[in-house]
Image 1 (cartoon, rainbow, N blue to C red):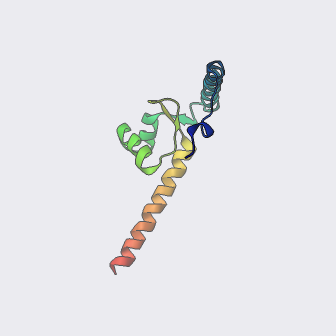
Image 2 (cartoon, rainbow, N blue to C red):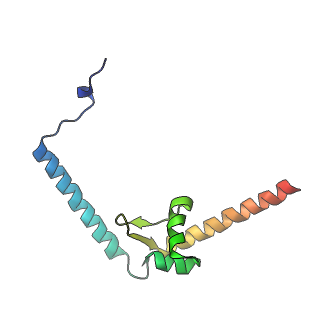
Length: 109
């Protein structure tokens, strides 16, 4: 029987604290970078996407979960969207729906 010691990584608590601090610092830098790269024209919130798509803001969150609407998750409750990615996603979704409609027509005949 194999022991768990072979699979576990033992790290002293001071080293673990350093690792966590570095990860936190890197995450903060990444968030800052995302916010700097995205000017107001390029990054939108859920209200902006809802207006672009023509639906309610709450439906945008459903689209993220079920249909893979591309987004940047900045925190548990903050999402930002790049307009170009949302537009590409809309075109792809429309194309997929057209293909499925054509298939349905063919199968009904």
